[in-house]
Amino acid sequence: MTITITKTTPYDDQKPGTSGLRKKVSVFQQPNYLQNFVQSIFNSLDGFQGDTLVIGGDGRYFNRQAIQIIIKMAIANGFGKLIIGQGGLLSTPAASNIIRKYKAFGGIVLSASHNPGGPDEDFGIKYNVGNGGPAPEKFTDALYANTKVIAEYRSAEVADIDLDTLGEQQIAGVKVSIIDPVADYAALMADIFDFELIKQSIAAGLITLKFDAMHAITGPYAKKILEEELGATPGSVFNAVPLEDFGGGHPDPNLAHAHELAEIMFGADAPVFGAASDGDGDRNMIMGANIFVTPSDSLAIMAANAKLIPAYAKGISGVARSMPTSQAVDRVADKLSLPCYETPTGWKFFGNLLDADKITICGEESFGSGSNHVREKDGLWAVLFWLNLIARKRQPVADIVREHWQTYGRDIYCRHDYEAVDSDIANGILDHLRGLLNGLPGKTWGDYTVKCADEFSYTDPVDGSVSSAQGIRIGFANGSRIVFRLSGTGTVGATLRIYLERYERDVAKHDQDAQEALADLIALAEQFCEVKRRTGRNAPDVIT
Ligand code: G6P
Ligand code: ZN
Image 1 (spheres, rainbow, N blue to C red):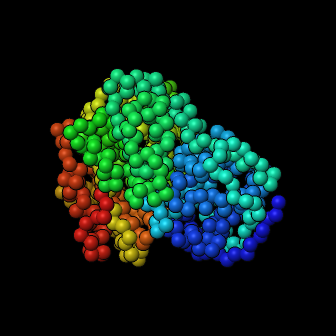
Image 2 (image 1 turned 30 degrees about the vertical axis):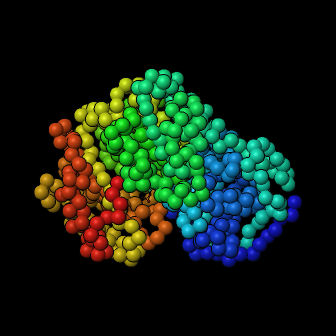
Image 3 (image 1 turned 90 degrees about the horizontal axis):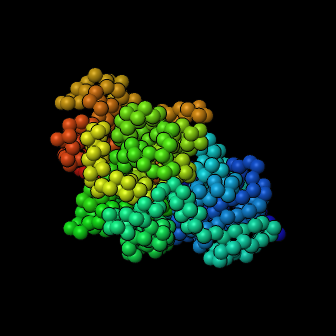
């Protein structure tokens, strides 16, 4: 085998964000840009010689080209085996499962998640470690440092690999295995959930469903599991063929972007259950006939009902949520005497807690939830959890949600995003908020008396690592909260996220519209952060 060593010079913008490196495709297409990053990944790893690397992506534009480059570099750098999803496809949770199941050294996942795809849109790459989860900050910091000094990269002189034919081939002494991207994942789901019960409920007409794959990776997974294995009517899964540009859409499962599903679920003939997933299959949106379940509520409901699911029937060890996620799950943990952890935004922070069995189920307000079955959030897992739950409870989604609120109270919740804000203005807003913190406790506005105000810093209870500056928290005596932070996943300017939460114990007030119920808090948030005044905007770009 001939290995070519190519001289290169660093790019200064390869700092991984909340979930890997995400940039426009044209950025990745610059000479050696991808190669620099991939070689920097390998330069940050130790002891992988002869070991296995998993490679797969969400199928977006540039996926195939990137995989060919990565294969040649992985061979040249000394991996002994490569496991690659057929067609270069692997959903993010499926990649996590493959890494774990086949005890790989790690994996490279190509995705920009829910961001649009296509020649003018986004691409992304991240490294997952041997537990199947995103690399911890210690690694991504080292990786970033390596991108700043990279001088050369290694690549094997071999022909492009046929990514479409299943089976194993030897390339320059390295085993390259092209696997079915769905099979192992479908088997894992069948181990966790009561497929027989769900199947019966669907056959009996107790459950009707629609799943919007948004022309992204979960199409083949959902077709296989929901239609072929569980017997949902053909066509229940729609937008099921993954496209390189996601059909021109924005594959983000929320009410704004999964509007086709939203129209069906708020329509006259709505099925019992509706759901959508994102570009790479790790996010989920859960709906019932005429109801949208917020991700924070979904997490709390899953935690409260975990015992009804075969894999969690013996009980769960604990739960975790990211800091801006509503406190609904805390109330469940409290009642069930379960440990509950508050982590920074980013799935990687759950990894240590899951590995140490401190938690079994975790989730985020950003439409992500998951469990110890893999080390990524998992869209279809959440869908199957809800289907299993509906089948066990024999109740429509709306009743399950209302009963939950009756028992625990409702955390009325929403998030306002201001996108593509000038970075200096955004940083100025955060600095201004930091300046306010000390003076806030004890002050009262209407029903809201500030109980605590701080900038969130997290000390990982397993390895002691500290992540500081993770967002501004303002907590009120009545259980309500406002949180401010800058997104770590945006690709243009800065995105300011404002998270608003009001706790409502009174059942008579549970049916309120969130924007109305949160109006006072929304006004207070503006008073604190002045985003409208400082940016000249008059409304958020996105409300979820
Ligand atoms: C990705 C990460 C999540 C995170 C979300 C929002 O999906 O995997 O862990 O919650 O992005 O992150 P952001 O920094 O944009 O709020
Ligand atoms: Zn995603």
